[in-house]
Image (cartoon, rainbow, N blue to C red; front, side):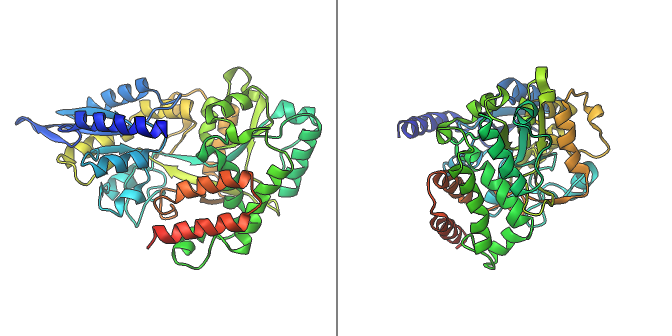
Length: 424
């Protein structure tokens, strides 16, 4: 509650200061404009990264001034909604969920010819046939990262391929005195990672259209196959395969715990690759969440750079800046090395970005170019498989609740109710 009150006070003061500069404003006869740009900060994508990237892109667009806004939390969509509700919707927005805003008429689509010319999967994150954020990069969400040294200590010679083998690996690790799986359960999105892996593998792996079928009312979370998949997560919890107190572990601490060797496996988005310790990177490997029959399912999400407001007063300048930022090789170097992003520019190899990456990055990135069963990562898609506005929060809450409750049917019923309410 205290955090909410402080945030509200901060927003009140901040929005007052932003009045007059949050929407593009022409500056003189030169055709210049001031654009507001919503970003976010992480340990990898620091304030310095954003300042440098903004300065570099600005050099390629005459007469533009960028006013950087920083989301106060990881929930950029929620903050953008708050700004929009008070008439302060930014001209440019980084890494938001397009469907949340495009259906309200708030975003301007990119020219498809430009998208086709520059990116490997032009429609990878298209929503209703239009591209609202350039498909600059991709992620696999989640991967299962593992510590080779801890595997060897428990007598495990290879990563598991089937779910039964995965449970055997967990059991061997536990008996060897090693925590099998790290979980940053104190933060909702991190708590959902094991469940996202299982649902992507077992539900979307068998029916890649499941989310669109859910929109059509053909399937439900309460269906038996979904509940069977969710029950696997409960098995991991009840068998004690996560660390003690996992639901209270912060995301940043979960990274530290895993890289320090306090757990053998870590189910996280491929952005973790940016956190692999360089001094002992060869200790780490990765694999996909195993399926019952050992078939490979890759939970894939095509990400992107910035969305453009449909309400901006300077659409041409906003588009010029967004395109310049999205094609800047310097940004890709930082995103690849620091945030584990898999680049999706046409005609480029990793060497073209002048990056230094680990072997586990190269091995993980190989899944992107392979012909395999790629499905939309459950809860992370930005295309037509994205969940309705607000459903991610409900899904995260269910993930945390299921850590301590066997009521799978009840939690799935809540998700169905939340979905129905969001799509009325």
